[in-house]
Length: 350
Image (spheres, rainbow, N blue to C red):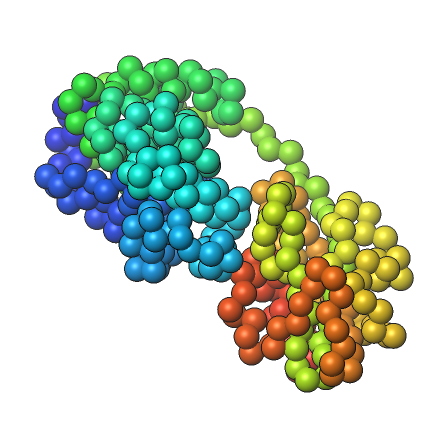
């Protein structure tokens, strides 16, 4: 199967900003940066972020020397912000431990912050042409259909990894990895796979059995729980907004936020929630409507309470004032951008 897939790839490979041209060696920094960004994110969403990061930090040394706040701000909107923190830590580790050069083995790559099994295999194969087998969602789908693996995901992951590794050739393993990803993205698609143009159709067990579109099977996901909270939009009379930084670890770690109450399944009554405000403005106005945001493991609904305090009011510990027209300079995650838009709309409609 490998020769057929590689021949197809040579004719139909996707042109991607991080992918080396035919005959050129891939830059490990480019491969690593793109693979971290592509986790849980689409190619279309990553394209512009990747180009901006590379223009701002052309080398891993440049990224390592950047302030974390700048990296988080540039990442804002991509989600899964632990990736950005680990991206920065990994860049620093490459500089400190490996003199600014990515190691070329899976084992050494796995020792770096934020690099897991898949990413280590992808960098080893694509950047260094080591015989390694990165298995993403596209590859899982291709392999599940080729071998008619009926075990539902996620239980099937190990079985799929073993089967994928058996397919990986000694020659051109990096191209083979990218060819498998391209095949899954453009031909062996989740719905209505294009079996008539697939270079591996003759050897596909799922196609022969007429079950290609049904694979891979998946265990039904449980419904996301809902959490509730209150965001505190506090504006000083001189036009500054009160913000704070979240703790480094955990959800949205290190990001800047509009202060809020804890996010809980029982949000509690508004007077109780208001006790979590960083300061007491002497009166709140509840803005109509809710801010809704979907995280991987839960859905969030935020009520926004607004208040104004006199000019010169000092920022309580752990918070800081930012002029409204300079909010764009701060690393606000998507949910907090929604809070800002909601609050500004409520102000304009007041």
